[in-house]
Image 1 (spheres, rainbow, N blue to C red):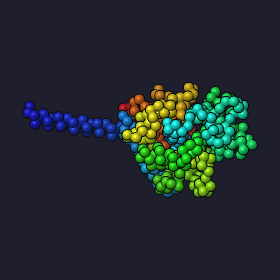
Image 2 (cartoon, helix red, strand yellow; image 1 turned 30 degrees about the vertical axis):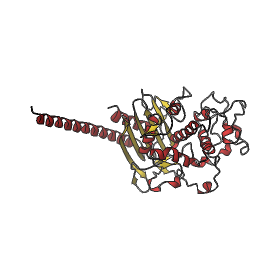
Image 3 (cartoon, helix red, strand yellow; image 1 turned 60 degrees about the vertical axis):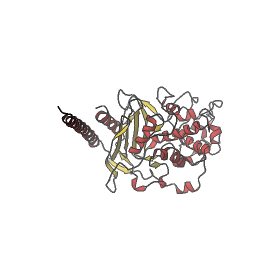
Image 4 (spheres, rainbow, N blue to C red; image 1 turned 90 degrees about the horizontal axis):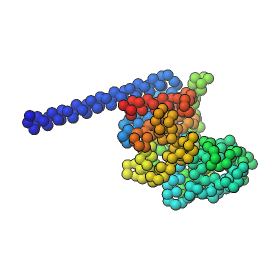
Length: 385
């Protein structure tokens, strides 16, 4: 066989291999689409936006259903959502940047950082630190609400003591949104930047991502409406407060205190595709596309559980229940009818993002059933195969 014939044979082999790979890939994507459509047919779902990472690359993005029920507009990949509690990881990432810069200590008394006394009245000698707050070991609770720091400020709320549980800080776990709204205020106190601007300048912009906490600074045409599903009436109800404008609050803004206006605990707005890129930064120990956001040491801190039973680190949990038999890192979110999930394997370099703007509120294994089924469908068809 001549060299020319060998070259032609090799070229044909490569072409056939590529075609076979494309057919297989297309087939698996078809199966994933079919699986998600079945999930949406078996349970009420307004819309789903998904992104899949495999071998450290985004291999699939797709959106299903409606962006807006009233206008019947379809959901698209560039739609942005309020992602609820996954937002906490952006706050934790920001704190670790300031920690690396030597501007604060994770074991410093939060009272010194926030400007008023933060102490469990049952254990007045035990200091509450950022480490305890970010891992939900602070003994704080949300019984008084969390939309303003007045609830825990002794000079503002006569019932401030109710913000604390009966156990000693560091001796028990309780998921608490107030923890992270206080973390956001501390970011402002220490950095001198308004919380939403800090996250944009130091996390989103360096990664080239579109989103943010300040709803008035975002393109309204990209925002996906959120819906609560009423099981009694079997109807979706628009959550009109999900993207409420805060012009009055911003006009009277007090740095380091008014921060809950932006909801550091749950107010990030971003698309599934961009959230997947942010996820890849954490998957790669704080670095993505040549941009280091936090150090490897800080990234490891975020992903290391401080409470063994709950598996919670700094706004990143370790779970074996999202996909049975697999240990994954990530977080979920739920608010105003929205459900979200971001989970990844930092060693095998795969991950999945699912955002739903309204669905049946049923839970299984601690997670929204629609979200969990969708994550498993994407894993089985696009990652495992």
